[in-house]
Length: 344
Image (cartoon, helix red, strand yellow):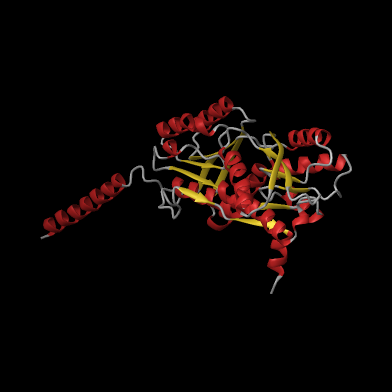
């Protein structure tokens, strides 16, 4: 009986060992939800872009909250490509070689995303793209590729609606000389950026659909930059004296550049309306000061939270609640919207 008991005990021990080994094997490569640290590479197209720097700060704040809540150390390795795609490709390769658990990528050139994806797939590292949307074919190559951004058509429609509402309420707000036409100039972002193209198209289309009579004076590419926009606006003020009634800008930085030029030429009080998109801190300050007529604000806290939630889920191999595309909520910022929000 004693020998039989020994054999039974040995058998149970062996069974436990085999079961444990089997479970370990089955869970091999699935990750560990109890990870105490993670390293995430963040690739920025340009660190000095105002909206991107605002989003970066919001992402860093999300990391702090996550570390505090879950006692998990998160290292963000942030690299600035300074507008050079080759530099960004090298940075992606470097971060992968350093053992990053995942990448968050703000592409320099959205059409070049396949290069970064190739490197990530080969290393088995998930990627969350943001702000600059890769082409659909690239994003669909792997189930561990995601995109977080704002819907540019919605941005443009909200911007356009600010102007439609203002015109309907009081036409002379936009038609300064009362000739029955709103004469405008247009400051656009990069020609290769999908948001620039879509924002331009749908902002103007919304104005037309709202029956605002328009006359385009001129337009130009300012590449999202305040200084470039300021230079263009300075030129247009001289070329078209007394003709400009409205300045439509694809983002707040370019709107602020236009305002700089108006200020230099003593035209801040001339009634020329300037509208932007992004709702950056500087843009909101200009709105409060009365020099920016309106903007469209993306909720950067929700934006950053979506980026980090997705990337942390992917690192921990948890099932994420997010779809492959996440569109951040936006809202119009204008005097009319402020009045409506104050209405009890």
